[in-house]
Image (cartoon, rainbow, N blue to C red):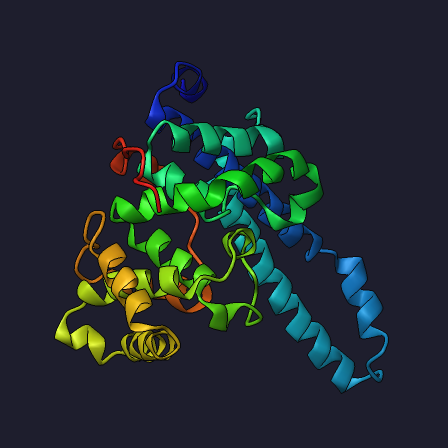
Length: 277
């Protein structure tokens, strides 16, 4: 049913199918990785390094408890994976294409997933190089589209990507790798986030980190550049109150959580073509 909806060009259908593939791939990987931990033979091989006697028996008892907990985890994962069993899962290129098409069709959830680079799994990078080449050309414009539509996660991830102070800091997510450092653009997005904050949020650790970033960037810009940033901050739909709380990881590390299957339907709305940025 999801495939039919996606093939018919339905925004939420394409997003839901991509999210379902992603979910089942992750659960399948977790099941396989956890099952490998149930190798009793490997456990016994490790135990031979303990001195014979009481010490080895204590290690064996501890290992057996660990195996039992792992088995329970596998059982829980298998219950979770039941509806994926036998499903035809798209390959990484197909999954990326589904995310991209749903994003271009205007589904907000898919746009967040694709623009931030979450449509691509890092352990499959070489499998999706052609799709990543397309992403590099589109990511910045699509991220602005989401930010101007009021998506706090993408707005903060894009601010993090533009901030020259983050260029060599931490893990470089895909979005940060697609844009050049731009202190004016970063300041504009930081100011938009700041405008959405309540007094209480300004006292939080991430609120204070944001204030320091605004001061740092403003100090290095001319009055004219600061004016450009302020004008740009007023464009687009305002971010919802509480944005910095729900998306602080995007602000501080550029990290945005994957879209869940249920969000494709809940965030299904058309996002207009963005103004030139």
